[in-house]
Structures are given as C-alpha cells and as structure tokens.
Image (cartoon, rainbow, N blue to C red; front, side, top):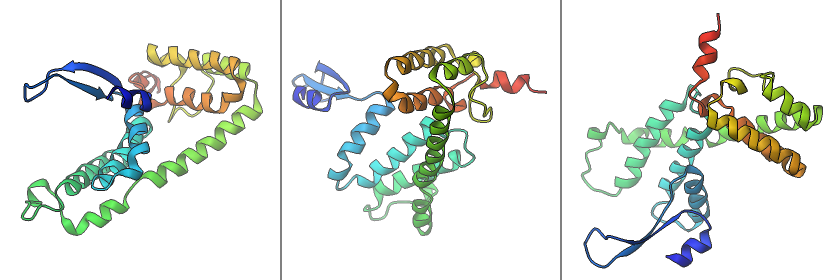
Length: 214
C-alpha cells in the first residue's frame, strides 16, 4: 500500500487502521478531493473491465459539479446519472425490481446518449478562445488591476466580482495572480484557474450581486 501511494503521488495514507472484521490492523489509502478522484479514475479507466461504465459516469458527474452547477441541464443530468449508476450496478441481476428505482429499461440508451461530456468540451473550447484573446489584448498587470477593481471578468451571468468572492476564493485568486508574474509561461493555465475560482457555481456569495440589481 505504501508503494502504491508513492507511485500514485496523491491521496492520504492511513496506517494501522482497525479492520471491519476486527482482525489484524490494515492500511488505507483514501482520496478526498474531486481532483484526486478524477485523476485516479482517468488513469485507471483503460484497465477497468466490469466498472468502466461506472467510472465514466462518475467522471462526468465530477466535471459537472466543478464548473456547471448553474446550467439548466445540471439537475436533470444528475438524476439520469444516478439511474445509470443503478443500472450499471444491477444490470446482470435477474429479477431486479427496476420500477422501484423509477428506471424504465427502454430509456437506458436515451439516458446514455444524454452524456454532457461533448457539451462541456464545446463550452470549454469557447472558454479557451476567450482566455487566449484576453492574454493577447492586455498585460498580466492590466489583468490583475481589472480583476481587483471588479471590472473583469465582464460576464456577470457566469462570474462573481472579486469583491464579492468568498474569502477563500479571493485568496486563491491573489495566489494565482502572483504565480502569473513568476511563471509567465503558465499564464493560460493560471488564468483558467482564476476564472474557475470566480465562477458563480464555485461561490456561495453570488446572491450579493443578484440582490443588488434593480
């Protein structure tokens, strides 16, 4: 287990834990953050046989939860993923009561076809173009001043003003801005991180701006 932890490079190792069977002590490697779970599943996906479908659904859900909670399709797709997870877990169980779970087997292929990965790819490709245009049109210092003065980013349907961010998000924005000065070659990725911190879906205080509108 220690070698696995060292090889993977993330997760938290818990040594000498009590086992459910109350036999000898065991070691556990746990993963607590969505980023760690996503990275682990992505690396393991080619090697899954029985659980590949579950892994793909979980990767889709993690991606949705991180950046797309405010999309009108978010809640509906979460319900669909829950049903598909149930189906993946019990599809080989003869006599399983699907009606009890609210699952219509004739609609499974439709639910599978509603996967939002390609939708999110398209939205992020547009975002990448926008980020590139921002970096071309202004210096990093101008970007910093624009963010701290609440002038950037301009899309208030998607992003929260810096002054209305939760304190932890403000600290992360400052951290990334400083990193951009130190590592200019990474600015495109750093800008993406800044915008993710300022997303309405990443903050609980976007209602401050909504309530201030006439």
